[in-house]
Image (cartoon, rainbow, N blue to C red; front, side, top):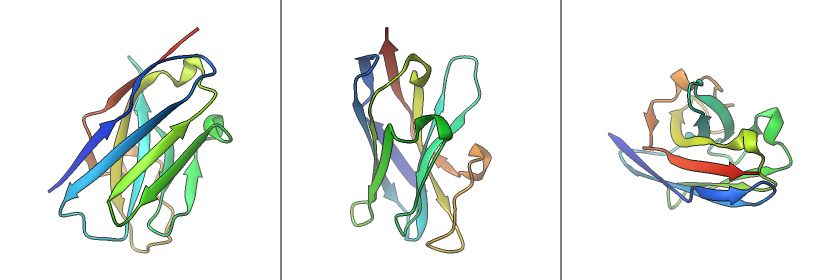
Length: 127
């Protein structure tokens, strides 16, 4: 079993910044990718950003240049620095892990391919 705990959500004005953090514990092993997804009310869970064990990063188009994902393999943590937030970024943000065949493999953007999730952290963007 793997446990994921997110933190760092909150209320921010449009144009502001937030930093989300996620810590993984349990039988994580090594070589896994970590990622962030989000889900707005009534919407589906969608890919935001991911980083594989080698540190290669992937982003959805709408957050490129505004969000930065990073990880610390020794601490089993992943962060998401979000800047210039927009109302469309408001959602519940979830951290996930995905085991891949290679430390440099590209993670899937399909949430069904991610096995474990945290409880989520709410991001609200006011105008």
